[in-house]
Structures are given as structure tokens and as C-alpha cells.
Length: 311
Ligand code: 13P
Ligand code: SF4
Image (cartoon, rainbow, N blue to C red; front, side, top):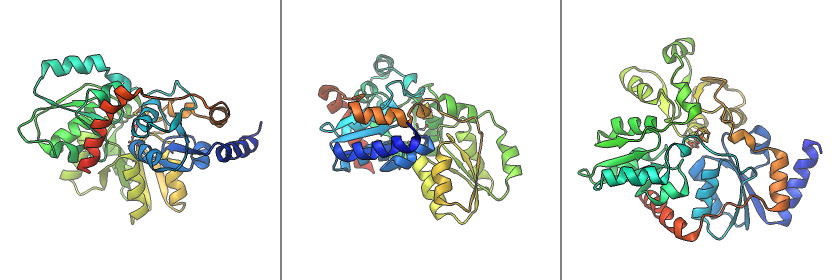
């Protein structure tokens, strides 16, 4: 089957099954182009809850589909490839979190949205890269905080809030490597560019310090924050420090602007597992269902609801 034939079949099945396709900002261009919504991890789950569709084809990684299932327990959530995982979500298990909690019985647990449903169920407050500081600020000052799993986002929020935060040692294998790049050299090479840096990057803490010390255009953003910045920005040049899939959406948004990836090698192989033929099979055979059992989902939902209440 050609791509065109697959796309036609996907559009036909979508109508027949009252389905929508949601795609993360890192998905392959052809997947973003057939999606009804493209966005960041939490934005997509909120879309899943909002849309009037019985079936959600979630083109992203497994924890994101789980989050959609937690927020929308009555919808059928499908992921086109069950192996689309996340190294960051895998960096803490529920058993490890339970042990950490037992060693710090008075602490409040804040977990980044890149976690499994089991870890969310052990969490007091969920957070995303765009609201982590706000979530921490809403927790009473005297409370000790356990932050997991991303060490770089953890260090970023710790320095922004000045709070007593213990940080888990997890990382995303794609963003961690961005920290090894000579950032100052990139700044010298692109003096007119806005630098947009995802907080999961190994360099996010030093970038934040740089941006507060020097008069340079470095901004720390979630993927949707980057999209919003580019929509509004006066600049025509942007250096993008995150997974390269986002460049497709950015370039569509501002065709005249120049987007320079911090590294061409920042590719998340899990996101790229979602291909047109797998999306077609997902719709045809209604596979692979991601359903978080209600007992677990209701506990995990609490941590997400607390976060939403703060925003
Ligand atoms: P966003 O929530 O910013 O889209 O990030 C998700 C992610 O997996 C980053 O690697
Ligand atoms: Fe997970 Fe990193 Fe891929 Fe994002 S880029 S989904 S954090 S492995």
C-alpha cells in the first residue's frame, strides 16, 4: 500500500469508528499531518477527555496513552505500538518510589507526567515541564518534597523555588545527551537566535543560570511552550534543544523562520515507532488497547487532578 492509500484508509476508518488521532510533537511528520490534534503530553490527554469520540488513537509513548486512559476512563484508548516506551518513565518503578517514601515518611511526592500509572498512584502531585515550579510553590513551605524521576527538571525547579527537594536520579536518554554539547559555542555561532531549551535537557540548569546572568535569549520550555513562543516571537531564528520531531510543526507554523536543532541526533526511537501502517492497523483491529484498571486509575487521577486544580 502507498502512503496515500494508507492515509485514505485511515481517514475512512476514523469516520466509521468515531475515532480521533492524537499525536505528540515528536511524532514523524506524516503522523503529525494525519492527526486531529498535535501537542504536548498533558495537552493531548486533556484533548482526549474533551473530544466527542469513542476511540482515541494515541500516537505517542505508553505513559501518555495511560494518562489519557486515566483521565478518560470511558473511552477506548489505542496505542499503535505497545513497545513505544520511555526511558525517563522507566527510570523509577512503583516499588522504588514506595521504598523512597518509606525512608522519607513526611515528604510530599511530586512526579513528572513521564511516569507509569503505578508511579502516579503513589504520587501526591503530578506536574509537567511547564507547571512544575507552580506546583512546588503551591505546596506548604515547611513540607519536604521528593521529586521524581527527572534529575534535570528536578534541579531546575529546586533552583527556581529554593525549596528543600530531594531529587531522583532519572533521566531521558535523548535529553541527557544534549547536556554534553558545547552550549557557549552554539550561542557564539547563533548570536541572533532565540534558544529554546526543554527542562529535561542535561544543560537546563546551567542554561537557566546563564539566562539569569547574561542578557541572552535562552528560554526553558515544554514542547508546547516552544510552539507558543515561536508563534509570538519577533525573532526569525531559533535554536531548538529537544527532540527533533518538533521541528516539523515549528517549520509549518513559521515557514519563513530558521530552526536549528541543538543536535540532529536528538531522536527518540520510541516516538518514531509509530508509523502509518501501525496507525492503520490500530484503527482496523482496534489495537492495542491501553486501559488502566479503575482502582489504580482513581489513585493516579488524584495526583493529576491536584495538579490541574493548581493551574
Ligand atoms: P512535553 O510534555 O514537554 O511534551 O515533553 C514530553 C516528553 O516526553 C519530553 O521528552
Ligand atoms: Fe521519553 Fe525521552 Fe522519548 Fe520523551 S524523548 S518520550 S522523555 S525517552
